[in-house]
Length: 316
Image 1 (spheres, rainbow, N blue to C red):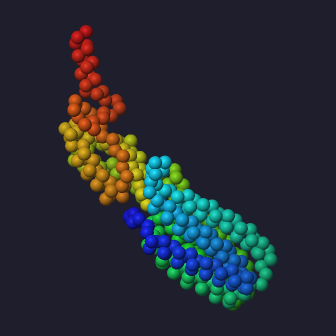
Image 2 (cartoon, rainbow, N blue to C red):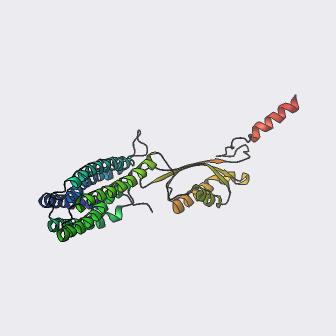
């Protein structure tokens, strides 16, 4: 299902998420320095990107609402995709930094205060869950989805940090802190790849992953008067809208009803596949004088041309 246009309610949710995320950052930085925990500081680094991504998400959501112009006829729907792409690259940089520091800490773990580490992570976990719940209704937008992946990553990381803190407090096994940091880095990398893959698919104008062209053809051919649908292209304009272009072969006897057929085809595309923007060219095997919207597919001579050739041959 597509999202309704993003309005002031969504903007308010993003602002709340920004405020709460800043709170998590303060808690984890203070707690990480005090407890000497790389895992907490690694997650704090991730939270910094959360703040950047949420700010970019707020910007992108505003841009998407801008009207189309003569130069940008589809509007600014892909601003959010570009933001998601930048987000994924930021995540990749964070992963490299965490892994480098984790390797250094494995060689020289240092003292870690497990109890304090766990307490800071509990606060971070609760706030992350609150942010995720607030953003959940907006997750079909790729920009918000990419930010939400950050938040869920923080929540999982906080859960792991709680366990690690308790283990350190009980056993003094300090290596678990950098090992957990590497696990957090792997989680971040997985989130980054998902966002990057989705953004690239849209920029490459790939067919949406949940949509099968064969199903579209089958559904459209059920419309009375439709013989075939070919030269089919389906792509995403942005995270919330889809477009399609195709050639529609209709029965020779239904050429004069082309507009009625078009209306029914568009109804099928909108309700069954959420394709709202369509460009459809009608074709018919036989075009007669006066037929409106009639174009013949390649490989089929126009009836009038064929008639003219026969007339010239007879005269010759």
